[in-house]
Structures are given as structure tokens and as C-alpha cells.
Image (cartoon, rainbow, N blue to C red; front, top):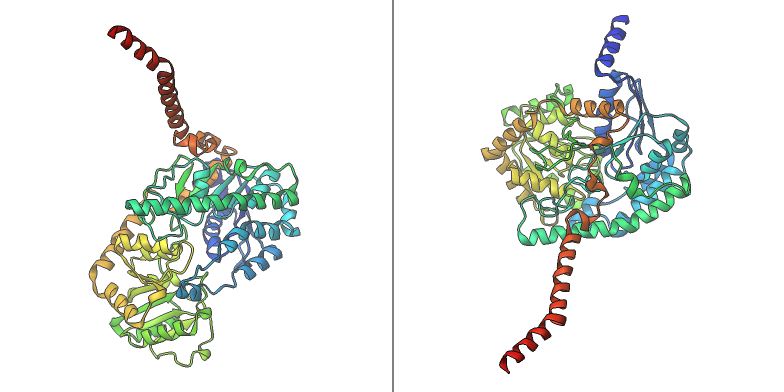
Length: 511
């Protein structure tokens, strides 16, 4: 025990960063938002740091040095808000979330969180650093102000760049696709027009949403809390859940570091029941089907469930299917299919007999796919699934199917194509090599910059003055308007004073 303590003291001394008290906060509506935070916490705790983690999903495990705070108001609100039929809405061609749902979530979840005693009790404690979710951080910025400490973001939704832009990072419409549309960074004129329209629409919706949220923050934390915009611009550092090989090459400021796949791990042997099931497939192998944590497969419309069951029955492979209902309820389940409420996804993706992955296209699932080098069939449902799928299709390791027009024949053809056409696995393996070829692991990068911000009590010297510029100033449109005004003024003065004089001179010459 004494040797372990000496080693820990030595490590902390070498880093120049003593143990800190860190508060992490995510108000994301799906459990996937927790994962990057938990991975960073698991890396920080052994280095002597104490982590308090506020989120809306009760803890699945205990770790000495990590305290999860799950306010009942936040848990209940997220549970009610996410009681949605995402698959049914997508198949009907409806918007999975209405504009009203998008508008109300930030300020309603803020109200539910700040009125809870567990949240307000945190204000009586001392922290050295806050780490917020880059998706929906605005409510937590009020806590940053009250606690008076530096803060960072983990931008969990890799294609969402709103908070990066607010911090001054370049996010031009021409090469930054909006996170919920099926666009890439290589857009035609019409696609750039569409991308600009949808980006400006989201920005326009953001303003009244933040005004409502500002009201909630001041109601709970005091009328002196500054504007959300001014607080958000003061972020010390951003850990971006992206990487050029799996998202897009971006121009990043010095206070941004990419940590895509921070949660990815080498596969370990599967539990015996799963291994026995896979072994029964022989060398033909198996496919894995999962719609992630945000899309409950058990809630899918019955006609989609029957379509999938019919598809699996016709495949010459065994199928592992993440399905949150009891097998007894599926009386038509084919013999080649095994379901589970929870399945060890990364260990499955890393299995040598896996032939393809059928997925909704969630960001973490797509990262894991590349990490383990597996070809994919995607069926996007909502949020960033379409943009994730568009990138994977462009990179050549995925096929995309639309749920609105899905048929058994289309799904069977897509599965066979990604399995039998070698280009899909080849491109998956190529991306795997690119993702893993980094100077340090994503976790090491995240730990370094977290401790860097703690050592320097913030990283304000890395901030760009662009964060304090508005749209017109940043793109020098105010200068363009100024020069146009000067030209117009000169032209007007010329017409008013010089033209009559020239005409008069001309008349005098004629006489």
C-alpha cells in the first residue's frame, strides 16, 4: 500500500498538478452524453483528483473518488421528455422532435435541475474546475458564475459546433455541415445554400430559447448572473469529441483538442452464452444489430419489428440483436437470432467472426465501428445520426438506408453488400489505422489539458479575441458595408457638385 501511495505522489509531483476537486455536468437527454465524462473521470481519479458528476441518469457502478449526483427533478424530466417514438416518427416521415420540443428542452431542463436541492447544495462546496457538456451547457454556466472557477467543455456531439463558434473557433457555413442534416464538408452550391439556411434557422431559434433559459437561471441563482452569451465566451478549453479521420478536418484554435473515441477499448472475450451462440454459426459468422441507448428497439412499430425479424430469418448468419424486451414476448423470433437487453458492444464489434454492424448511426457507435474496423449498415433516426451516416458513407465503410422506405429486400441487399464487397471492410480497416495513429491516446490528451487548465487556473491566454466579435465584425462585413458607403458617398458628392461644374465648363468651351 505504501509503495502505491509513493508512486501516486510521484506521478502528481511530476505533473505539477496536485489533486483537484472537479465538478462535471451534463444535461444531455440521452445516456450517451455520460460516456466521455465517465471515461475522463476514470482517468483522473487514479491521479488523485476528486470528481463530482451531475447528470440525469442514475449511476451504474461505484468508483472511489467519483460521486455521481442525479437530482430527482432532472432524472424525472429527462425520463418524461424522452418517452418518444423516434422510429415510428421517422418511418412516417415526421420530424422526430417538433420545433417546440427543441425550443423548450434547454430552459425546462434547467428549471428542473436548479430547483432541486441536490443541485443547489453543490454551491456550498469548493471546486477547482468545472467541466460542462458542450451540448446544452448554458444552464450550468450559471453555476460556473456562482462558483467562480474556470471551466471547460467536453463537446459530446461531435458535429455540433455552436459552443465552439461562440468561443471564436472558425466554423464557416461552407465547410461546417449542420449537425442534424445529411451533409458533408464537401457541399455543392445548393447544399451550401441549404446548410446556411438551416444553420441560421437554428441560430435564430437559439436566441429566444436562451432568453427563456436566462430567466430561469436568474430566478434560481440571482438577478446578477451575467448573460449566457458572455459567460459562454469565457471557456478555457474545449475537448472536442471528433477527429479528422472520423469527423472532419477543422481549423482549431489552441484551446481545442480532439478526443474522439476516448471510450474505445480493445475487445475482451465474450460471456460464455454469447460465445456459444456465435460458435454455432461456424465460419459464416454473425451480424450485430443495435439502435443504441437513445432509440429503444422495444418501442419500435410492430411492422418494423416484423420486417427485421423476416430479414434476419433469411440471412445465412446468426444475429445478435440488442432488444430491450423479454424473448418470451417475441414468439416469431427465428432460431438464428439471439436478443439481449444489454450487450457488450465493443467486445462484439471486436470479435473476429463479426461480419457487419446494423445501427442507427449514433456518434459513439460509429467511432467504435472504426476503432474495431467493421463495415456498417446505417438506418438514421434523429439528431446527428444523418450527419454521422453521411460521413461514414463518404469514407466508404458504410451503406445508408432510409427508414421511410425500408423493405426486407433492401436491408438484405445492404447487409450482403457490405459483407461481400471487400471495399467496405477495406475502408473500415483503413480508417481504423488512421484513427489509432496518434501521438497520444484520446484519454491521455484529455487528462493533459484538464490538468493544464487546473495548473494555470484557467487557460485564458489561449482564448481568441474572435469570441468577442459579432458575425459582421468576424467576417469583416462591417468593413465591406463601410467601403460601400464610402463609394456611395463619393458617387453622390460627384453627382451633386462635380457634374454641374463639368457641364458648365463644357458650355463655356462651346461659346
